[in-house]
Length: 102
Image (cartoon, rainbow, N blue to C red):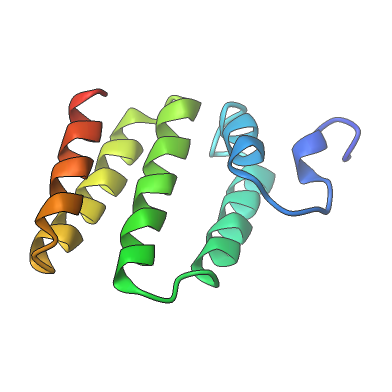
């Protein structure tokens, strides 16, 4: 099966692998599973609230590159809301500017 779907190979899950997989359709169980594994992998790296915000931004970029605009906007909005709630105005402005480019 890995021959048909090379993104399923056992190695670190990169954003590029997720984008490649998502382009095949999030409705495919193996794609959804890979997305879940990537999310768990990335959440292990979260140590601060800023890391959480940046993970939401990263997730948004992945969704956007794969053509999932609504999911990208939702992830950007989550990052934006957290930055606002934590009064991180500089980060909030960065996220807002990035969203405007969509």
